[in-house]
Length: 565
Image (tube, rainbow, N blue to C red; front, side):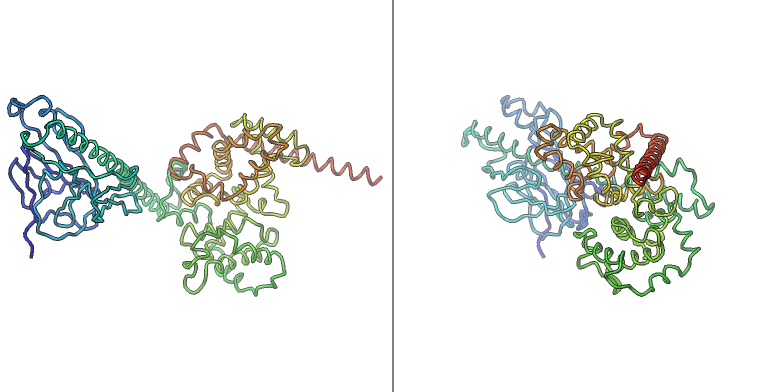
């Protein structure tokens, strides 16, 4: 059994060490101590656990001014330089995050090593160790936490998130004999070391800031989940939500993943449909499958393999659960709905909605089926009009969106108008919007990354179609530059304008936009930009669409009658 690890303070400075558990915020009492100059501290059980995340703060206290009275001005300044490489008249300190790991015993650690080689103090398991800046330090954590390991190479330092590879510095004596060492060389060398340590400390501080943001987000999510648990208790007791306003505010902030399925079922009313139609889904699912050539089943069979093709749950090794693959589950749900709703049966886009319901929450097939039914038949959604044979809701969405673009994005609207004029009747009656808008509304924005898609659906299930327009306007705001640049006579004639519009239709392009990186930021910016959008505006525009459609139909009938006579 090796000797106990100890930390030796061989500097003429007193040091203070403090370690905090990043997950709980608690201070580890056994890791908080002071060591006088020339003393050492045995390091036995520190209370650090393997795998846990901590933050260590090391403070070096300079000698009193009276003790440095006989030194030169340059030497005195050197003693006031902190280990982070910054000159400070007070105490020098730096903080860094680390993850506990187990190491062997039997080593005496010198504080001067920290100063001269830029060593990173790290508590590993129940014992500490020091990691030299002359060793490779690599970030192996996918979560962004600085979990460090030593590779044993002594010529370079590599820190994830820092630029390039830093050459190791020359070792030097912490308290050199000025008679044996060139004074200026010593000062230059020490200055260079402090600069290197400053770069390292800056990189580690960035990681610590990012980790603190994650902790803050987890704390906020935990607090929100507790509020939703209270709302669920209220709903189960009183058979209603506490208030519409409170429900709206909390849904916009996000439904916790653990309760999303429970809330979605009740927002749509699918839980009531299941209770009222016991055995109905089983009956529909047992209907013999027709021939592959029969519509709409032929189209369903063609669309299922193309539904979110890169998703591992639907098409990868994880797609089988309980002996039934995810594609088979999706096909069963779409077949059952085609048998159930003779008017709609199936329309391309329903596969995306049903699949996303499967992916978002651990729903059973029957729950997904009745949620799809509610989306199609509940008046607040009426997707049967969207997925019906005439795709009336898709045309209405295009008409209303074009009018809203005029209100919220006038420059883009003028570009659309210019393009429509030069292209002629190609895209009548809705012009350029017709290129990309149908794909957006038919998918209900399930084509965006899942972290944002579920948040959009949270709001959609409670507030209806208005959020679909909000997302469309926000996406156009963030992508309008390419369309504006191509909306010139040359760009329209050369095809660049059509290419820019076609790009907006591609799911891969929409999915790759950086606006989806943070769902909370996306929701906040989207609502801020579309703050002036009101239900009355949308209702008025929808009414105008229906009136224009009737007028168009009447004019077509008059033309047909004239031809007949």
